[in-house]
Image (cartoon, rainbow, N blue to C red):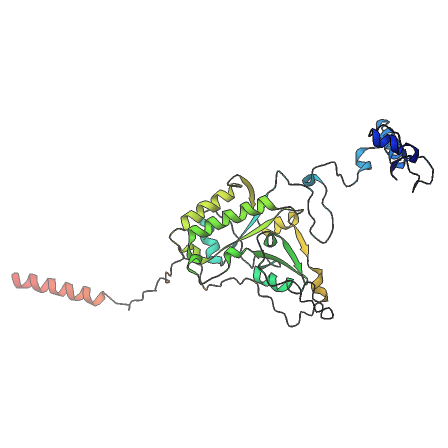
Length: 327
C-alpha cells in the first residue's frame, strides 16, 4: 500500500509541495480507502494501553532489548549480533604442552589443562581448519574448488567447531611452530597475545562469547624472559587485559557460553582419505622435576657392607700390648 496525489491535483502539488491531500491506495488491503498499517498500529496501541497485551507478547524475540541481552537462537550456525555488547567477555583456555609443564605452572598459581584433560574436545592447529574449509563449496560438476587455502584469522579461531562428530578448538596463528628467529622472541609473543585479545574483543560481532586458546610450550618456560609471560598470565587471571574483560577457566565450563559453529557440509564429503592431526601432549616418564631443565634423577649410591668387629678386637689387643711394654 502507498499514498498518492490525485491526478486532478498534481498541478497544484507541483506549485506548492505538500499542499494536497495524499490518498491511500487500495492495493493489497481488500477494502478500498483503508490504510492497513495505520489500522494495525491503532489496534496494537489500544491493546497495550488497555493492558490486554504485554510488550513481550508483542515482540517474542525481544528486539526492543540490546542485542547482547536478547535470548540466543538455538540454531546450529553462528549468527551476527545487531550491535556491540558493552560487557563482552573474552574467554581464555590455557593449554599446557605436558603434565610436567602443568605442574610447574601450578606452582605459580596458574591453572592450565593438558590436551588429555580437555577430551573429547580436540585441540587443532588453524592449518587443520584450513583443510576442512577447503571442502566448502566443492562441486566437480560446476568445476568449483571450494575455499582458497588462506589462514584462519583470530575471529575464526575463537569459535568452537563441530566437525564430523568431533568438537574442535583451534589455537591462533601466533602459536604455530616456525623456524623463523622471531618465533623464539618471548617479548614479541607476549605483545602478539595482547594484540590478539584486543582485536577479538573489539571486532567480535557473533552471538556467544569468543573462546581463545593460549598454548604454553616447554620451550617458553626455558626462555629467560618467561617472567614477563607469568606477569601476563597473572593479569589475565585477575580478569582484565589492558582494560578488556577476560575470563580464564576450564574448557568444559566455558563451552556452554561459547560460539559454536557446525560445519555440516563435511557430512557430504568423503573423509576416508582425509587425516586431521590434533595437538599432541608430550609424555614424560618422570614429571617430579623442580624445573624444566634436564635434571637427572638422583643416583642410588650403594656401598659394600663392612664389619667393624675384627677392627675392634685388633684395636684392643694393640692397646694391651702397648700397656704391657711400658710396664
